[in-house]
Length: 297
Image (cartoon, rainbow, N blue to C red; front, side, top):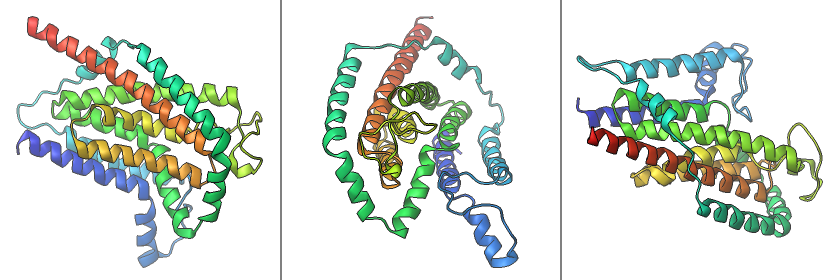
């Protein structure tokens, strides 16, 4: 099997694994309904994708088998597990004036959305509610929450090491930096802004210190922080479009679920994309510098 065939196989396996994680534990529930009719302490359409720990263990057992298959060496293969660590240690965050300009422009647009569009869009979301939309929301939420984002990072890291594909290792490192930075930014901004969620029906201009605040959306920031790396760096149009559509689905689902206002998810998408741009550029430039240094040596 050629290296290209292995990459396609790894990509197909990952897509299947990601689909399973989104629908998990629906397959187990379906089998139980057919044959066993046992009492299962899990929710087929858990809103945040959180089930009983035993079912999480079952899923990660399957994910571990996938990792072992991908990392199973062919005869004579030697994997450079230190490649990612070298890239992580060498990467330096490189900010540009354009990053600040993008942030200011995004803030201006988001302020307008906050003032004029939040309430009408949330009212529209209330009008279009249906059982089908609720089911779609529950599944879309899983792409931005739970363990799916770390799983995406781990896939690119494992597959990049196994198939000696430097670009995938670069994606993993950039995603790890983006996800970590996005998580820090989200928590700081949430604490400072303290905006109430739409589900409380207090209006878009209410603020309160609470355990869970609305601005920004952690799910959406995470989705665009990781997806943004692929949107900006991948040479594959299919991958870029898929990453954008998945991130967009997370953002829209958060509005339809009344967990966030429209300005929340737009701000979150902007934060995620700006962080992804900075991290992707930093990792790519460091990798290019390392490549040039290797050629000189």
